[in-house]
Image (tube, rainbow, N blue to C red; front, top):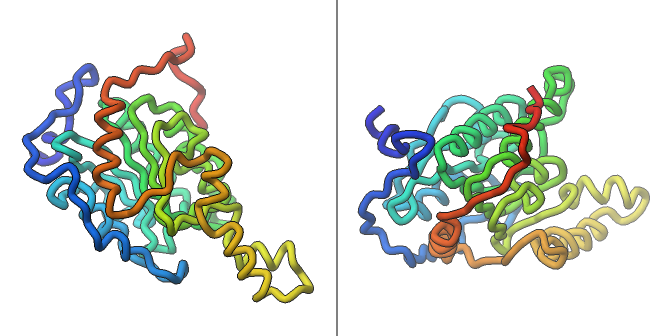
Length: 268
């Protein structure tokens, strides 16, 4: 509990505490350039990436054993508290379901309550399909995460690590939800859906293997999104820490003018 409270400000009117940091701001982790597998179907542990980026490799994870396809927790960047939200490809390929949507939404709103910047690492293939999720209200619960990101007024930085598909792209703090910085690693894939599923729908009766390769060349990279202004930059993974810290310094005095109503109507 003491570790937990060390990350929090004294009240909602205060800024998060800042601790002395002996971890270099411009530290480059070359291993990050090789962390994402070449095969997009191979899993990895997103915690390994987070630990290489945050101060001294330390993250205080919350709800570790619940809704494991989403990782949330607190860390520090240059001594200042940040909230981390990350899809976990190691668990169910990182899909969003009812529980992970609620888990993420609650955490994003908690960070917004206490002026804690939010850093989002995206690798999500979509929402979990199935009648159980549909009957349980996946659309309503997924909308909670979208709403939380849209309403949050703290600095929001998003880094796409690999997959960012369809409806799940829309809720993982994209450029359309009043965020601040949007980056992608070269391995990013921002598209409606994966190549295999797409060509089975739009290229029925054709050479699917050939069409899948063409789809991958055209869309399974961050360039189409960057051309349309959905990304600020495609960055080298090793430079991620330095870029995030520079942006946090830039946005530390961020202020938004919201409508006169105190709040919107959350999809409860």
